[in-house]
Amino acid sequence: MKYNQSNIKKAKKYLDNNNCIGIPTETVYGLAGNAYSDIAVKKIFILKKRPRNNPLIVHYYNLSELKKDCVLNKDFFLLYKKFCPGPLTFVLKLKKNSKISKIVTNNKKILAVRFPKQRLFKKLIKNLGYPLAAPSANISNKLSSVKASDVKEEFGNKIKFVLDGGKCKVGIESTIISLIKKPEILRLGGLENSKIKKVLNKPITVNINPNKKNAPGQSKLHYSPGIPLRMNAKKLKKDEAFVVLKKKNIRNKDCFYLSKKGNLNEATKNLYSTLRKIKKKGYKSIAVEKIKSVGLGQSINDRLNRASKF
Ligand code: AMP
Ligand code: MG
Image (cartoon, rainbow, N blue to C red; front, side, top):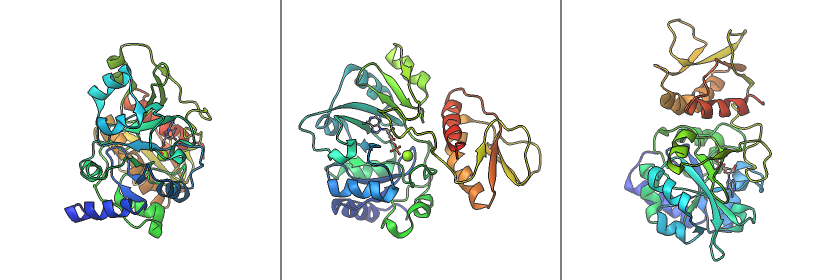
């Protein structure tokens, strides 16, 4: 469904009626519902088959909306000024009088929040009067959606509406930083850690271990294309698809490059769509060449590593 004003109105109507819809953000597509409504938020968990102890990220239009729900601190403002709107999620203290559904946080007093940059998303959320809980629009642990058609593939007729904003510009999920105590990165993502460090100008811990209590979504198996995947591959085995960073001067129909010139932004953008395409072509397994863990390469490898636990 392409953008026009009537699609934004339609999206608002579905959301006002406590329905969940697919929405574009710059990172990946979200499965969105009114974050103040227990009914809407429950639907998100059911549709995604998401465990209730895995909290949702809530998306805001602007600071004054966020101030109603969260306690903000100095580190938050430093990062907000530099990176928002953008692919950075903050974990913050929830205010006592916040209207956020308790189901969003699994009854905890902390909330993950973000300000998306995507044009259509901003047009939509501007007039809602409530923030949107929106986890990635995919069945739990599967590949995230980067196109409206991916969302339809994931949920079929179970969701009534997807707002089509074209292909997501970043292509993987946001980076998550907890600001509850000392700054702590809980998930690698679309914003490189080094850029965050520069702004805060103090040590940051990175804690992306699976089964961590405060980020249950960071499970070992995640982002799975649904077929086995191996990393650091040198040679292709029989019937495997080969994913490489940069286009190679060889003709091989089983070889899929992430970026013509090996650009990491482009490779990140194409990561999930390439894995999805390979699965659809009927390959039984995927081999990925070694990708350097530098900058966004670190986030790409994080996703591939979790996908390889299939
Ligand atoms: P997704 O919405 O699918 O991108 O996943 C959201 C992830 O954000 C979760 O799996 C958690 O790892 C993290 N998250 C959400 N809320 C919180 C929170 N209150 N505290 C810590 N991590 C959170
Ligand atoms: Mg997700």
